[in-house]
Structures are given as structure tokens and as C-alpha cells.
Length: 179
Image (cartoon, rainbow, N blue to C red; front, side, top):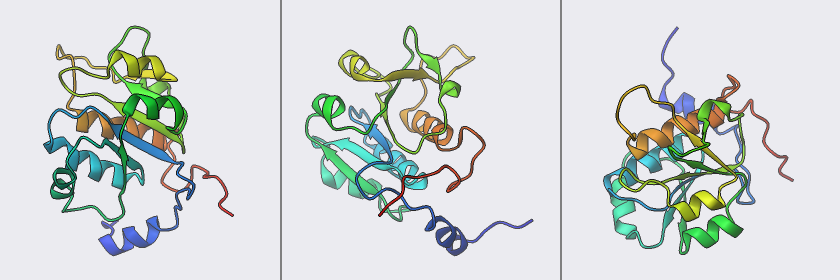
């Protein structure tokens, strides 16, 4: 067994066509607290071929500066009104990640090829108004006494789960036919 080269990985992953109509997976960090998380979340979205949604209030230079290394093909979506976007335009289902009453464990999610994964921030979490707009709220079970994970870590855990919850590898979860 040997490690694959970057060129081999790129060639292999090009076969996993993402939808061209704006669907697919969206990682939405709509209430960022630390700009340092922007680059990590962007690279995470890129690794799973997801669109990365950020509020328009985040300066573009902050995002570009933090994404300069390690991003091959990131789709960036600037969202002017996060709550209105979640209510009307976000790909469904909208999955909020929050420690909340009635939240399902992330392991309850099936493998998904289309969804919006909504992340809050380490201090305030996902705002209640956004939780009310979510189709489902999931939490990442934790055994320790801390009450949150770094938002970048949480985003990676949930994306990895919905991308391959059934043990699938990239490209084996069926994508919609593109004409």
C-alpha cells in the first residue's frame, strides 16, 4: 500500500461531478467569530466539494487571505441576509449543528448529496432564529465537560459524516444526473 500523490487524487476526484445548478452540499458559517476559522472551513468545504457560504459582512480580503494555501476549486457563496437565505434559498434539508434540546446525534444523518450544514460560532452557537428555520438539528456527542467544539472541527465532522455515512467513498453516493 502506498500514499496517493496530489496529482492522482485530483484526477480521481474530477470524476465526482458536483451539480451545476447550485445544489450539492453547502457548509454555511453565517455568524463567524474568529476570522482564522474562515480559511480552515473553506479548505474543509473544498475537500468535500461543498460550497462555502459566508455572510457578505465578512470582508473579502479576510477570506481570500485565509484561503491562499491548499484550496483547489472552492465555490464561495456570499450571503447578504443569512436568515432570509436559510428560509427561502438554501438547499434542503437545512441541518443546524448545535447542542440543543431534541437534537439528533450526527450519526442519525444518512449520507447526503444535497444539504445545507449551518454552523454557529464558539460563543453564541447557531442563533435561535436559524434553529427555527432548520429542517433538523444535530449535535456531535461529546463525553467531556466542554460545551462546544471549534467550529472548524465541528464542520469537518459533520461534512465527513454526511458525505460518507454509509461507508461510501467520494463518487459512490449517487449525484443527480446533469444533462
